[in-house]
Amino acid sequence: MGVEILKWLVFGLCVMHSATILAISNTGDWVEDIDYFHKELERNHINLYHNVSKEEFTDKLFQLKSDLPSLSENQVMVELMKISRMIGDGHTQLAFWEQDINLYPFQFLEFDGDLRLIATDEPYRQLLGHKLTAINGTPLDVILDRLSPIVQGVENEYSLKIRRAFQINIAQVLEGAGISASTKRAAYTFTDDSGLEETVSVSSLSMGDYHSKITHHLFPKTTPFKSKRVEESSNLWMSADMDTQTAYIYFKKYPSFSNMEKFVRDVEKFLEKNNVKNLIVDLRDNGGGDFFVGLIMAWGLVLVDSIDWDHGVYTLISAKTYSAGMSNAAQYRQILNAKLVGEPTGGNPVGYQDMDQFSLPNSDWVITYSKRNYRFQDTFTEGVQPDVMIKRDWQSYKKGIDRPLEWVLDDIRKRL
Image (cartoon, rainbow, N blue to C red; front, side, top):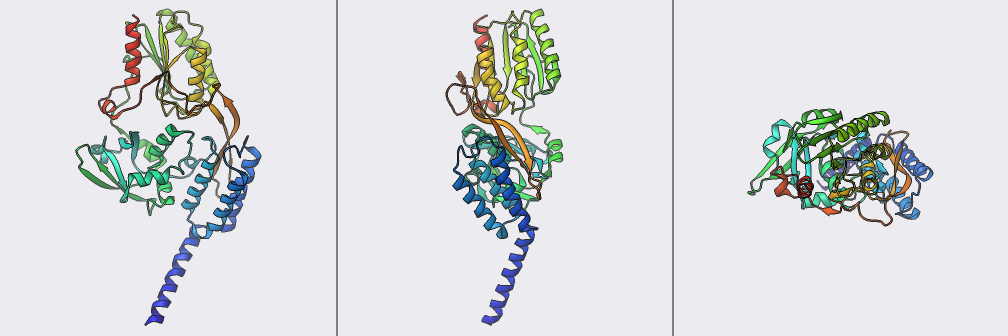
């Protein structure tokens, strides 16, 4: 009897080991990819070892290659994400979004340690505003601890919170981190403010389906002052209020140089014609692009003499303000004498930026890296710090109150 049990145990272990090996189609290919990852980063990154020693970095890669026979593809991905984070700048990362990833139909935002559901698909709209408390039975605090060294695009504590909230619904990351056993389904547990708990089993979506199906938001996007007066796209437009002589520019993404030139010329004409004195530039959703395009906006705006250049210019910033968005925030404070209002930015004003990329030869995974070292301040700070700190809070958010914008408008009214 004991011999038969031993035979079955050995057979079971062999089957498990075989299944694990099959998850990695060719260990030699992975070794080649990892070596290429190391070689190309050393060759291209402006200063690869600014945060981690070469010895520690090399040891981690050697350990990953040694562990390959026992890892699945998603576990390899997660380990490379961890190693990329060791480099210490948010522009050096494994660009998982370039892969064929799956996402669960949720969008979260963090409020004082709680992850609140702010957007979702039709079947789960009743959960909007609820707190995420577990995934597959694993408590949220455990998940956040596990994801913190993994999530990509992190430069400080502020971008960490934003990235965790976004990447907590990526199926491959959850499986690779041991939070989920599958990339197809997961059980998300939510709790409302009364303590009532609900668990839903959800299927993952392709990235294309995710963006088309996330149609229910806790609050729809609104246009301050109701109507847009100048519009380049849904990501760059201007509205205005004639009673307070105030213009508001929503600046989420960077257009081409020529499109920005046309937009800012149209803005100039409107501001001068209507004798606009106060200007608000909203960079809170700006995750980056080409900050030189953002400087075209500054170049055009400084030509407008009607603006109160001593007290009337404001820039709204948040933890989502990153990369070129962060750079322009710091530059607008200098060039436009803008008062920065909101939260510290997710990008650091002193550090490594200007992203380029290469692909691994076998997996085709895209790796990005930093090419330049910028100093947008004389001293290093964790994020560009606002002149007026107004932190995001759930009580205001759930009522649809935009506290930073309300503060700016109140400040303008005081000077009327």
